[in-house]
Length: 319
Image (cartoon, rainbow, N blue to C red; front, side):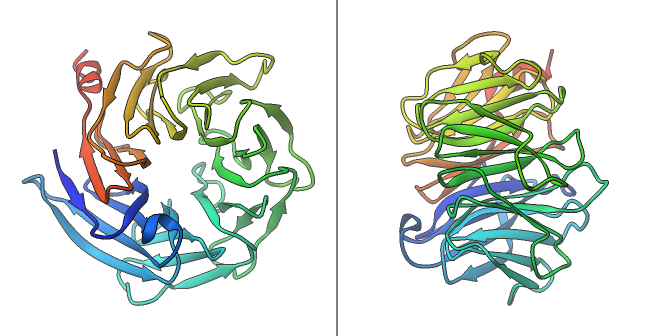
């Protein structure tokens, strides 16, 4: 299994390139994100299962999330603890191409729109706000207020232009129309705990999953929100990130503070179909490779990035 060590840096977010199947980026922080700086590592996975470092970017504060542009294979947007979004160009790694500073506290989530009709970036912050950005402009287009506690995650719908979901420490998930920043279209209490992550199903525009500090993963159908349509149990501590597979309707992956990465199939079982224990610290980052069926990357506070294909997904792809 290809593994990369980021010395004295703790992994927070890892993302495969939407353009190149072998390229990924990892956002890291010193001192568990509590102090010190952060580093972005852009890596290529070589045919001999080793990594080549393509670029490395240093920042004066911890880096908590990173996302690739959906239009330019060389552009990245990273989010940091000083409330700043920075746009980087892989071809010129010395300094950010642009800095966007409006948030008053840590930016914990960043996402690039996927529906192609528009090219917008979302940032979610511990200042309880979400901001909408055009990466070519220096100030935000809109600010979305409504969550009463810090916002951990905001994610664009892969199906519906201008639609995104956000989750917060206030236990709610909100669905927004980016053209109507004054108020969320829907607000629902999804956990009796902080909600750390959300993910849209790639094959059904109405289905989302949420992961909470209660260790639960819940599925929601926007057409009927009274009860979750599924609940996955097994994580011993908080679910830091949950993500739907790009290749199967009912398959998800999660990473947790219990040091595990788990694979779930909500149509098959309420329990994990596979539990991977290859980290020795909190696991924070997770991503599926859109180009290679079943391939996953994860990263954690043990300074390790792993790229692997879980056995449960290998058996699915052979079906």
